[in-house]
Every structure is written in C-alpha cells, then in structure tokens.
Image (cartoon, rainbow, N blue to C red; front, side):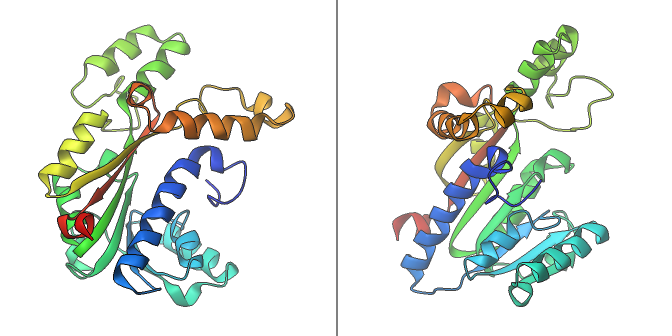
Length: 256
C-alpha cells in the first residue's frame, strides 16, 4: 500500500488518515506542544508513520519484520523525515520489552489485532503505552466485508462459514485469523478503559468496485472517495465494511 496522500492509495486510507490527522491536531491544541510522540505498532514500512512524521511528530514504529523496518528506514529517508522516525523490532505481545509504558500521546494499532493470539491483550498493551491524555487509532478487518466479498465471488458456503465462525474465518485457507464487528472492537476499546470517540467503516465500496472503472472513468476516483467518506460514519454501513476504524480516547483526553 502506498502513501495515504497519494490519490489511488487514498481509496484504502483516506477515511483513516483524515480521522487520525484531526485527532493529532486536537492533541497538539490540547497539549500546547507542536511535536507529539506517536507509537505505531505493526507499522511495517511506514504507510502511516511517514505521513505522521511529515506533520512534524516523532514516530516509533514497532514491527516484527526486519525487511519492513528496512523499507521504513528507506522511505523515511526519501521523505526527509529520518530524524523523526525510529524503527524497533518487536510485537504487540512483548511491546514493553522495546518501548516505554505510558510514553506516547497517540498509538496506532492498524492491522495488528487480526494476527495476535489475544486481541484483548493487544488493545490493553496499546492503551498502556498511552500518556494520561492520549488517543488510540485502531484499525482491524471487518467481518461483514469478508462475508459480502465471498458471497459476491460465488463462494456461498465460505460466506456462511465466515458469518458463523467465532473468528470470522471462511475456511482453513483464510489468511486472516480474526475478523471483528464494530461492536466487538468498541467493546475491546472500552474494556481497556478508553472512551470511544468515533467508529468508521473503511473500504465500504472500494473493494467492490472494479479497478478498471475507477482508473478509466473520468471523475470516478474523486466521486468514490466522497462516497466512502459519506458512508464511513453511518452505522448501517459498518456491517459491510472491509475494515473498521475505532478512535479511542483516555478519559483525560476526552475532557480536555
């Protein structure tokens, strides 16, 4: 996936990026500090970390893959933000073996919960990394989007399997270990002690529209982006989104 600021990639990232940027801007105003400390767990090659660093913030990326961290270093250097991006090898389970507890104004947990053995622990660790006034950006695979995609592809048994499976998996060949409903994700965030500030559906339509249509039809990309943004906040579309984004705030941040 490319930079969230590039037009084609923005179909997959625009909603999350706008919510995240707004949350960081509000933290800057509330704290009076222009530079925030941001932790990106599972941040890989810096799809969000580098744009966040471009805003002027310090970003620590924790990822288990040395190759991803090497790509992160290269991307940060090319973007001119190498001095504001640090890559550390580690994972959500052993997060505090490599980063400071309670040391961050914002934590990004994108595409992590799907792959951890204990999603609740993953969220708790992310929350424990926050300062008393902090925000959590949580992005995870949505159950409904997978069910819809399998059904539209004609794999009706797999769609039913995903719908009924406790982890939302459509079969043994499914590469995603866990999928979630909006209710499950918000419960994880609230159980970890945060207030849910916003829930958005991500890629409600983008994964269903043929790429050739978006690339060749004049104005299609911009129109689809606007449609995604309009549908993202509506609960009725959360149940069919490919991904779900939850913004959580500590009580102190919510009251600031």
